[in-house]
Structure formats: C-alpha cells, structure tokens
Amino acid sequence: MKTICSFCDTIISPGTPGDDRVSHGVCTSCYTKILTEHGFNLRKFLNLLDAPVFLVDGDANVLAANRLAAEAVRKPIGTTRKQLCGNVLECINAFLPEGCGKTSGCPDCTVRNSVNETYKYGTQITRRPAVITRQNGSAEETAHLLVSTQKDGGVVLLRLEFCAQV
Image (cartoon, rainbow, N blue to C red; front, side, top):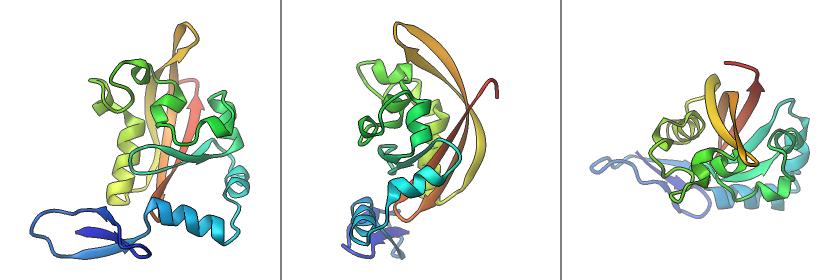
C-alpha cells in the first residue's frame, strides 16, 4: 500500500508493485510545519515526558529531543538535531568510515530496527532490550537500553531507558 502525505502529496512510502491501494499520512516536513505554525511547543511537550525521548524520522534522524535525552547522551539538545541516532548515542559503528546505518553491525541494531519497524508498519514497541557499544572519549563502554517506539503522523517517538543491565 502506497502512503501519500495528505498535505503536500509527497510519497511517504512507495508500497509494493502491483498494489494500487493508497493510504494517507503526514510527511516529516509537513508535520514539522504543522507543529510550528499552530503554536504547539514541541520541546515543552517532550520535556513533560519522564524519560529520554527523541522524535525521529523513518531514517532514524533525530528531529527533536527532550532535556532528559540530552542529559542521557551528554550533549546539548541543539547538537542532536538532524543527526542519526547512532551518532547521537555515540555508537562505535557511527565512527567507522561507513557511518551509522551502513556498517556490518548495523543490521542487528535494535534501536534502528525498532524505529524502522514502527515507521514502516506502525508497530508500537515497548521496552525492547538493546545493548550498544558507545565511544566514551578514548574508551568504549557498553550501554544497556530499553527501547520503546510509537508512530505519530510521519515521525516516531523513540524512548530510551538507560539501565544497569537488560
């Protein structure tokens, strides 16, 4: 089934060949425009949430983050925008020449796979265990996460809970 933006007619998802069915949604660009033009303060809303939360697109690019997310990744909120999740989380694969999403380890990435699954199928994921290796200065550290995702329009709300173990 092809998905088309209800506002600008951009194809959000091309669907499969031979399937003439069409669904409508809101593309990332229009979603952002709707939020900003109607005075909705996205940052204020995200900061009301009690866990680190990122708003991401279907390619796992961070569109917005709350205060707790910025604290969890030890970065100012502004530096997380338009960055791939692996870069924001400082996954060791993001530092390789291929970059986040393109290394041999990326097909097994629970964060990326959860975002993609939710974006493509609308599947809500709740507290899926994940382990990533992060670059911490010159050392590597293991981060244990619980990943939750939920689709809203053309974006995915990604909630990350950092744990001692999963």
